Length: 224
Image (cartoon, one colour):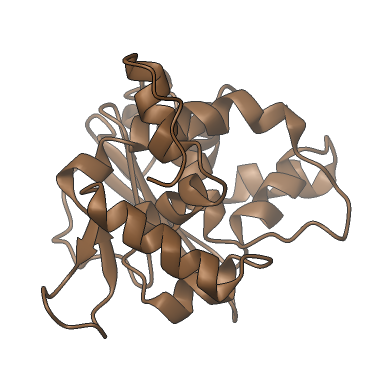
């Protein structure tokens, strides 16, 4: 690495790699999906192409990322097993910084970032086996999949008592499992959050009209 604290301390050595500007944001993108150079360049607004090239080389040298197809320069980048270990750091920083979100219009936002934020804020211990209360199920509710779909965004999350998984595009095809529920919403995650943040008629109608949505929402600490 170009800069180093040169301290034989795990925190300092980690910061030598992860503390460089833009590095954690590159890791954020690769946690959501593999990306080509142009994909990263398009979403990391304000980062020059030369700096992006350098950061990718540094992350490759550190063993945190690799090409999906080794030797193919057109192949997308993906996180290595070592790189994936940084997920816990990223999620912890999202939780820590969640109260700092701003409404300024000059701050950019990408809808796919909210998938990772949902994983960070999800509380699996709050997932209750309340399927018996829903008309659709005779037994425990084991999972809830929520699909967000608009003209510009298509993503999904799956909540269980063990954790939350997510992805972009159409959700994986699965056989209908007893105790599973699917909710389709014609909105982005941010739009859902906006509705839930206000105690009004729109929020009450949304929660009452969609089975299991309230159970899902409570897994993030309740309904404000």
